[in-house]
Length: 206
Image (cartoon, rainbow, N blue to C red; front, side, top):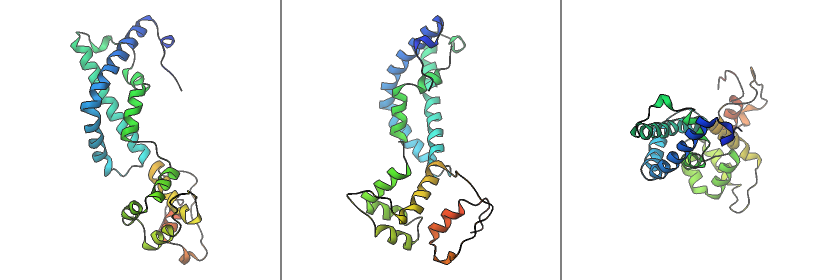
């Protein structure tokens, strides 16, 4: 990954970089108090109904926060009597590399994997039931709860459709797609298993 250090810039860019880092670090402490929490709730509310996957929502939120912080930096820059056009470099690229910005985004949209999400659900079956009732058939819920273990995390066969669904929600559709899939004894599959197969077909009919 490209890292911003003094050696990456000429003398004028070094000066701008140091100024930006000082101003940004100061601004971030203020942002934590009056920006991060309000924006966190606001972003979550905005993207809650977004049909995009989690990673795409996280990127949209990062771009929104980055735009706010960049604008605040330039407002401070202009308050000191300087013109935006005289700033050398891209503040967004520098801000993205700071630990403060990365911490902000982790607090708003933490990194999630299908396995970590499933592990959390296994430790909190009541939460699982509350959320699963909106998207899963009773047969799937009952089958999964039968294997819930509060102390140990083990992926079982009944977990595979759930992991696949979580992966779809987090990363979106990925992997190989087929023109059609032939299934023997398809009536024995649960609705969630059928949806898992449907996500691997270009134009699913069921």
